[in-house]
Length: 221
Image (cartoon, rainbow, N blue to C red):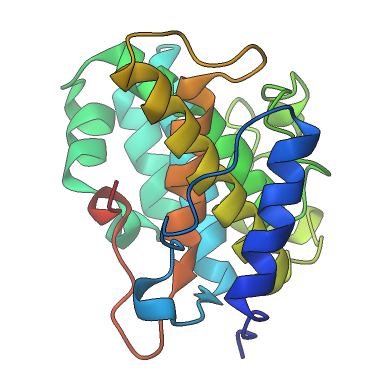
């Protein structure tokens, strides 16, 4: 069963401390938590997170010209087609969409790898590690989805840790938004594209009560 996170108020206090350590301003006291109506989120099932990692890995492979028929065959064999968004289907199967848009989702993939415990940090000042492909299904062999899952038996991040990380990136996105509104660049050491794509994956990863989990392309911003 998914676990419930700790008190949201204590999470925000630790977020403010983290922003201060980065030399960044805290949001105003009335700035909301990323949890609707103060409800506590749970982490979605590990199988969903693994499927999302597999799909984003194939998306990156298609960015670098993996043949579409091989990509779709791999996803079919992995039984993850139900997790594809319509836009992802169009890009993977037909090449529709801007390649740069999907290339930028590398940081989302890195975040999903963090959720699965495959990477050890999600430092906002450090971009995706070059070793990430070694941690994901090897599509050149190709390695099956099942074999990859058996090879990577790391524990999923605790929901309380994910909730704290989500609040940090939620507030970092506010910092970036304030800079954009002022016609300024983000503060030094903050990459707004990295922040946005990591927040995307973190918001997708949490669910609330008995509500239907949001699809990848339904995450609110």
